[in-house]
Image (cartoon, rainbow, N blue to C red; front, side, top):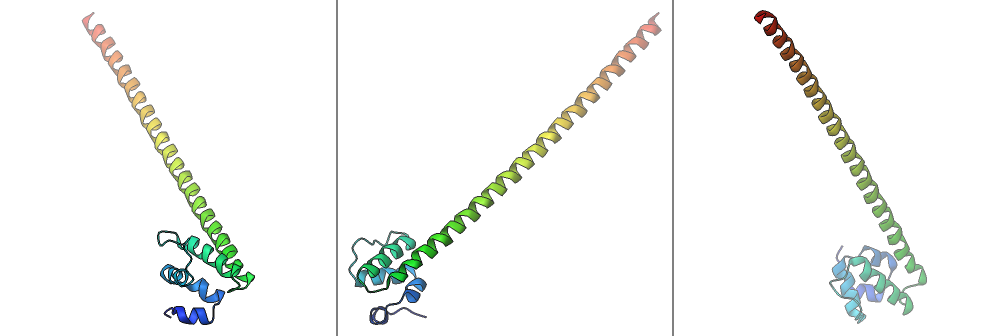
Length: 134
């Protein structure tokens, strides 16, 4: 469905406004000469300013403000999910570091045991050598 500004102006609705792309929102802002809106802004910011303007000008009913609340709730849910994913990632990385550290410790312990065994064998050979010399 393509957006037509004339149709929106003739029959403005929050349902249509909710479905608009950023470029469409900018077109609506341009039509109503809302100078506070810049193309460099985030879509959510453009929509917030636009909805507030349209409600203040009685172009849309106050119920249109619900769009902003719904988007805030959705944004909070997304941010929470992102946070949860980061926490899980950090936990997985910590477990991997702990496993690597345990493996390094185990390797070092095996190396020390081999070294002790080699030292013991060396001492035993030295004693045998001394015995033979006698």
